[in-house]
Length: 208
Ligand SMILES: Nc1nc2c(ncn2[C@@H]2O[C@H](COP(=O)(O)OP(=O)(O)OP(=O)(O)O)[C@@H](O)[C@H]2O)c(=O)[nH]1
Ligand SMILES: C[C@H](OP(=O)(O)O)C(=O)O
Image (cartoon, rainbow, N blue to C red; front, side, top):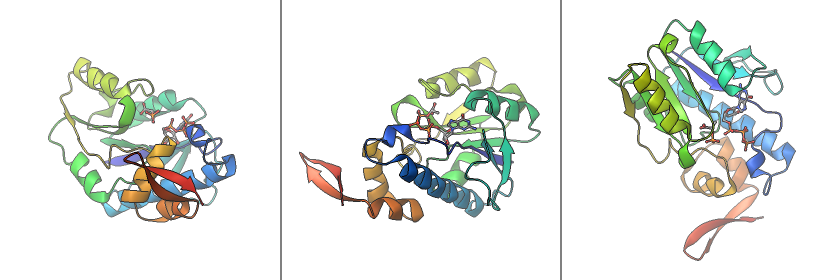
């Protein structure tokens, strides 16, 4: 089994631009990436690839193999799956709440494919036992698409239902979940910039 993390640092997390500058977003994604790698390592996954359109931000990477593919997310991942000769776990880089226990749970599925939905219809992780007979299509309602792709390919699948594994950090409100539930460098970075404030029953962010 091997894991692949698609990663693009340049201009990352544009949806966080209302609250973080470009420089801050690029620093923040690097911290989230390192936490995802750490969780994979803790789960005992020895082969970890970071798949990126460029080497930007990956110059000092020692904990994972860096693969460069300038094609878009889907094309790059599908090329990776085509060439894979063992089960593949695709994990997004924006999952600082994903733990090694989640990863162990996802990869111990008895089904051919395990799909971890993300908020708003996305797919946070995908474990594919037969990568040569599966193709990804991220963006839009990719969770539903990935279920359909599995069925069409004759692969049965499990849906891994988890609030924390399902919380990808895309929008300012997701930073609230990171501050409440997270730990480690990505959370520390955000807590240096914001505090939590309750307004109208919901917890929100206030810049420090
Ligand atoms: N290899 C590769 N990875 C990508 C590319 N675009 C995004 N990613 C990664 O794919 C995952 C999901 O991307 P998004 O959640 O859309 O993150 P993003 O593009 O930084 O954020 P937004 O600008 O807000 O859409 C993250 O791990 C990104 O780092 C790409 O063109 N190539
Ligand atoms: C890549 C995309 O991420 P989102 O935009 O949902 O965070 C998806 O999961 O299909």
